Image (cartoon, rainbow over all chains, first blue to last red; front, side, top):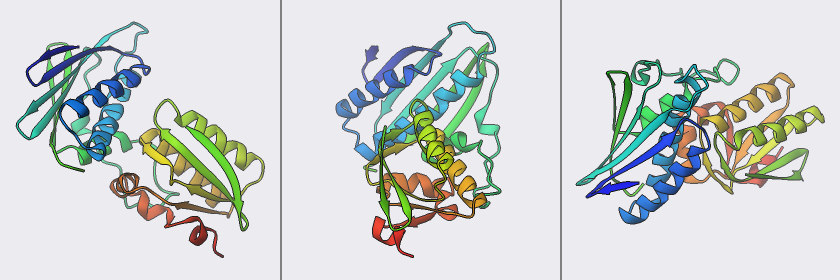
Length: 143
Length: 109
């Protein structure tokens, strides 16, 4: 992991076992940046949802691909970027599940992106060349 | 993630220990499916020791609710920690599950 001031960059591969790696770095950062447990849990959840989507849907081939995770702390805000060279996918344009449906009517899918959008203050997506760049922002709070 | 099973009234209580994430959700699903295949129709998910749940875990909750409803049984969720309750609220699951404070109220007839 490279560190530069308040920026941490982590290189991952497109495998679900990296969820453990992500958790480890999050624990380190929560100590370093004094992030509360509830706040860290939200980041953990958001990263799991976003990273799992990349691994499960981003690469039609069976090859190993690199996924870059960047944490940035600027004053009271935390920025998380996920960069991959998978198929173009903009999660900000996926429609939200209808959370007012009953259990019988509710579809199983769509929850992950909904949780990301609700837990983070701002989520933006850009296609840059052959890469997906997902950037998420959250004001650091105690919960 | 570990599941412990007890009984309360005519309910099977499933105490969920730890995290339900993409990696552990299949174990949770297998545990729940096994109970249902044994004919259990009234379930309480005791979430007092549930520290974390992602959409993979929420999917299993929803699957369980659908199956229990189809079998005309009851599913209650109890003892949610505040951060987990928040996830249930955000996802709309607080509206589709019967959520109780504790096992006593969950197992009351």
